[in-house]
Image 1: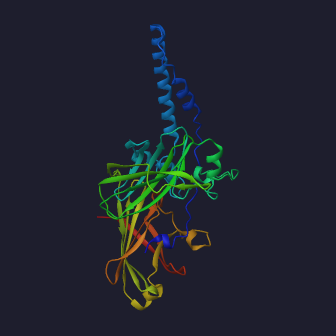
Image 2: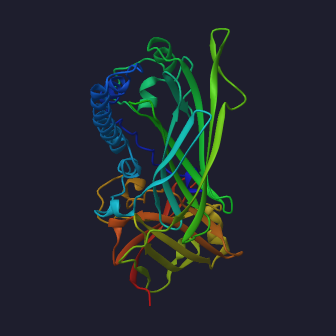
Image 3: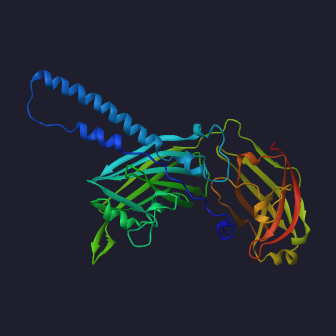
Amino acid sequence: MKESQISDALRESMNAVRLSPALRAKTLYAMRGSEERRPKMKRKFSAALAFALAAVLAVAVALAVANRKGVLDFLSYSEATLPENAGDYVQTDIASDERDGLHAVVREVVYDGHRLWATVDINMDGEKPLLTGLDYGLDDEEKWAWLRHDESETDDRTILDVYRAEGYTDAYYIVANAYDESDEQDTSCEVHLQDDGTLTFYESIAFEQEKAEREITVSVRAFKFEEKDGEMVVSQNPSAEMKLRFTVKASAVDDEETIVSVEPVEYESIGVRVDRVTMTAKPLEMDYAIEYTVVDAEKFAQTDDGLWFEFIDPNSTETEPYAQRLKDGFSRTGETTPVDDTHYRQTGTLSLDEKADVYTLRAYECWEKRRFDTHEIRMKKEE
């Protein structure tokens, strides 16, 4: 039972980074020169100028890359709190490749052994190609502002409107997936079209197994749009495709600590006993596990296999129960799995700043949202 079935939270929108490509365009234009033969002195001057312009271009490109949204930018839109040293865990310049005019760069990765967050930048060769992905197509419905994550609500143009009006020469639908071939995983993804035409994929992956080191594959395919009968139709065959492979190692937490519950706690109204609660600090969030046993099958049956536990703020003034919860971690993934007929294990994440010596844990049934017992869970350092 995945928590996505019952979550009351909505994914927050992401704002666009405004970055003018003017400097890059002007520099490229200036670097274009005549190939005619010139006197030696001018040739030396031209070489010096080209070197200087190349340096300017390198700075311009570096600035553009530096100002593109990275992993931490995407994560910052979550309600979870980034630790002050979050940047220490960001691995950069992971992998890149080019094939048949398709360029892909795995720019940033954060990996904690269980979850991976990554940004992948995609470009296509061409005079002025337009790149889209995920749910963003070239039709009369998808808004340009959505692809750009522009929340100003002043731009009502569709992506198709912009494609036809702004001089784009080609359009491609990009498919990008990051995965571990040897493990099960849950993935969420978002795309953002940058000012310079780069399409950035943001991948968030929760793996089933925890590994200190992992082989990751990023598959990228580009499908060209073709106009047929006045409509833009995606080709069934990719015009370019590639796979990037790299090894990622889990970032260690200097002060990693695991805390566990002091004693079992009975939830009498639903016939279960919480045997153990475990909290483990990771680089960007805390993992939790709640292990419980069914001690009264008749009482437990009233939850209709929909029992969940939620960590709440006992001092919250919110009236809606879900608003009383502690902050989730960035991955926002969770599930309850049976160990056997009477034992279950619920896992999930909390924000790092929710670490405490005592937690308030409330039981609820996810189908009708009925709340049951609430108890304090005292914690201690794992021995």
